[in-house]
Image (cartoon, rainbow, N blue to C red):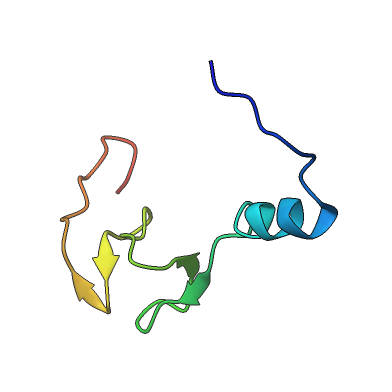
Length: 64
């Protein structure tokens, strides 16, 4: 099994870990409803994407 010859420096270790940072999801505001949502995702409430109706909302028996 391979074993490294020398200790990895703080600089090399930091460069390797530089891409592992956790980022918050990027948010957008919908054009039609003004709702905040994740980028490139359909809005759950009205089924819109980029201001266009993609999914038709189903009527519930409770809604009148």
